[in-house]
Picture (tube, rainbow, N blue to C red):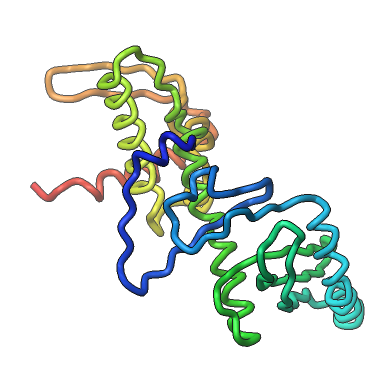
Length: 241
């Protein structure tokens, strides 16, 4: 987002309402779209050098998780918090470190926050709240990449707006279909590409008569049972006659 675009935006804040800003690597500053957010530092920089410093502080926690896993054979997920300030920061911030050790190896992650984290329970809760961002990011990825919602190559704004509406309608239809306990687990967890290859994109013979449209599929189609499950789900959504 450019600074010119930011200048055209108007933000209204409710009294005592917190504003949460998340940054994933790289660098963010007030010139990168955060100018309207009050009480935000002039500069907040994340670098590989910073990551190395944080890893050095949290290494004892990682060693502790490794020892516990070696002793018990049970997945370990440990947390700690500490105060840290990089050279470019105007003051210290709270850093939450998560050390995880399991059969697949080790995993050390950090969350830097200005939120109040008074105790151990809040440390875990703050980290878990942050990692929930992955769910929304997956949905955005499905809309943009899975359904190609960014294919807006028309010359007119209204035409592109209509295409975006159609993509969004398809995304809502997909969510309505797969959010049902009666569907196979494969489809409930599937990305749009899987739905396209397993349910939609299939050769068929279509015969249209006065009273009905008959779709004939190959008898040996390996995903016929998935198509039947989706058809039953769609029929359940129809209003009663």
